[in-house]
Length: 132
Image 1 (cartoon, rainbow, N blue to C red):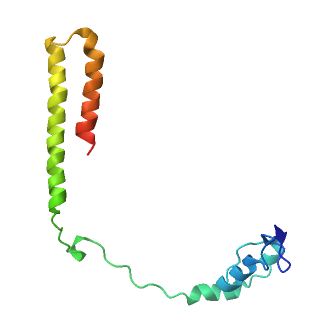
Image 2: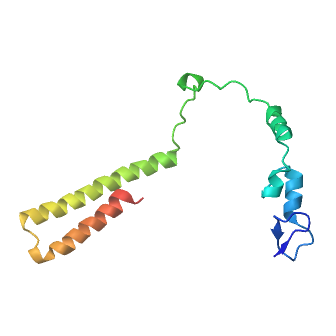
């Protein structure tokens, strides 16, 4: 890194031929780095004239449903089919989880198999209800 010879606030990569910050400030007209000595060089009147020269964008547009009478587009057949499969997966997941709960409640599964049953129910619920 090396300091800029034209502006003490600028520091840049020593492999460059010239200070890139000087060029950016010159092209943009914006002081990117300020110091005490540079603030005193800012012409407030000229800067305010730049602000005054900006044209207002005009009146604020009225926003509301009446101004945007768009019609929704129907879903594509592929999306419709995917939604149908999602409903089938959800129903199948609920049936499997409910079946596990019913079998546990009826005592058809030995008590030492409950942890496996719970893990199975959770995995099935995740696979059928959320993925897809």
